[in-house]
Image (cartoon, rainbow, N blue to C red; front, side, top):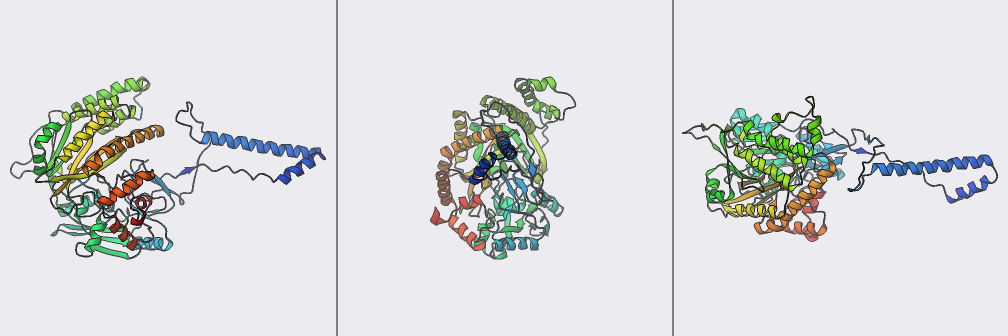
Length: 597
């Protein structure tokens, strides 16, 4: 089932399947039993009738016991499979929507999923929800790893509000409806010779969502994506539709640019664009000691740059992207290895691993199976299949990482294309991700804390024997003036490093996914305890998870208060959305009022 929210239809794909409850009749009152006993002494026919009644009750109790036994999961150490005696009865399609994020790590079931087709309809939905005090949390494409826009109380999605409204070629500015996806926007303005300044790894986000969570691309001279916003139209519950910009209510404008959907439904966005341009991507392999020597130069001389670290190896993949030289043109370099040669080691490891883990698969494999041939699989597909064989076995994960390092060594070279094509990145399959952002000095004087963080992180992984797959991705941005951005700063020259750790969910087996999830949160907790405070690192809003433990939650609330203007944000929420119809439990827990913290 596709986990991506549809851009053109409501999310009514698969309904919540729930067992129709078996209802026991209430037990007869005590007087009934006394009466039955009296009657049984006077009439044999009555006695037989009572016997049949009690036999029926007995059968019903046994049936319900069997239902409970076979319908509820066994403990993890159960050695037999549970039987499937019942079919699950879905509710009518009009009543329930099942909505999950792309990685299927967060899922909600709601009876209120609104998709307006126009601004006036959105205003009507918000006004009606405000009057009835019914929640409609804004949700975008459902790509956030933490499901930040999901709410069982109700949601509003702008996928049907996806038009390019205005294009100003001279100012290089475009106004769009907030439900338009990044790729649709880029395709819609290319005829005007324009494109976005920077991109995140993928193109399926809605513009409203990518701005509200403070998403980013990479490049130490380039700002996070919220800095591309120069004006917004918000539909608020208490004040109706308002327009904000640098000139019109600038304080609210900067606060709402990265407003997490809590200050109003972003209906329209005006973006500062740039001329459409081609980039040369250069991919090569280095090591951390070598990077330390060249890091300052690499940050300052490359428009876009990122490092991909392979745990348990010395390999660092360096990817730089720059405009084509006006003097030299695109590089004439030819790759040393072709695709098949680059994938050779990965394919060999997969075949070898199949013999170890699934010998029956090798023995019974036939040519008419649905699984595609190994030579048709991409690198990320092969990695998913390899990890699925034994995802938490450190030795197996190390072998997969070593194969990945070899793949990148044979993939060194250049690639030329339009910026929206080059700056994308195949992130692999479903996954858990934690991404932190922390200060890294200035472009003129990097602190080198960014590489120190990585060095300590790799040491932590090896010390704790964490089955950490690749890559650990490191990117950079300039600061943001949005106070709720994780990269916010009052100093114009500040730069920030973003580091993402990952664990893939390459299997559909619920127990295995649960085990991977537990291991990932152990991994994340270790980085939090050892690194975050010392490096002033804070999690990306689309990746932050709300702790279940009360003490941990209280500590997180206090920590957020040290970094962000929580009181100002809550004040704006009270003024614009006093009934909190745009909020959810996540927002309410992260940003408690000051008197309750």
